[in-house]
Image 1 (tube, helix red, strand yellow):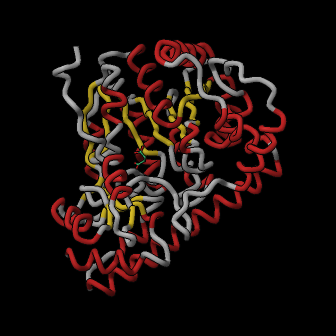
Image 2 (cartoon, helix red, strand yellow; image 1 turned 45 degrees about the vertical axis):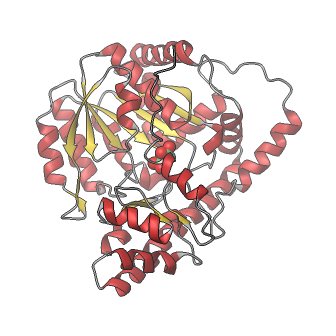
Length: 395
Ligand code: LMR
């Protein structure tokens, strides 16, 4: 049966991370995968998560299945974090939440619910978007169109083009937005632009689906939720896919949640029930460990304040690295890299060609994606000048 089954090529991001791991050069630099790394190059476990884990190990008495909807503490914590107090009050019982295996699971269950409600809906995705969005949602049966977003000429957001494209969408179409720290460009709308975007989405009768994987890594927990909250003020329905991989550092534990906003309590309940049923068709129950840890961190005042402080330091460090990298690249090349300092989160396009990105990897052992996306959080005091020299040499 499998004799002629094709062997598939590796994933465009994970494959390059694997190539970097296999490179014997001791001075290699991995800027591929979107994971936060500290000054020593380690993707650390948050102190608050370590404490929660110790307590869980001491106290856990069963490994029985999780409830299909997920851990109530985790879901309550994520809802409050994302929607904010005002959002929670505004929505009342019009929102629901389901725990998922990571942010990918959340996007997938969100897509399942969209397909169940509107199988012919078109999903508008930014050009470019995270490459996994299309297979993740497309394999449910949804169809896509792109809206203009990142302009290589402007090295930033082409907001007028974005609005023009979305203005041509039909009522009932879905707009997939990145809540903050756009992946792959690092370019986000300003607060004012979020307001305009939300107005347009409401006027055109579009449904926003927000991928929210980096809250707290761009400018701060509340600052990064400003776009979602602007939408909540204006639209009756929405889907939000949340990941706890990055901002609680639970990558391998696969902790995430999909939040639903319906026109009324019945609709919110129906959306959650469809998500739970879709999960049952594929993996049945969500994984426990990461969500139990995050639930403890978010519901304990002490752990939560420790986590928030550590997250704020991470955010500050990424923004500091952006400034250092911008300055060093500008002085090494004489070119304008100001955009690196104004973007948010882990990612930035260096503006290199595919061939230049390949040369960086093959000749310099500096691993970036073909699109020239780098993970800024992979830079540190030890490798920054090496990366700058390598980029200058391929330019
Ligand atoms: C990335 O874009 O590198 C991250 O979101 C990790 C992944 O799964 O691709």
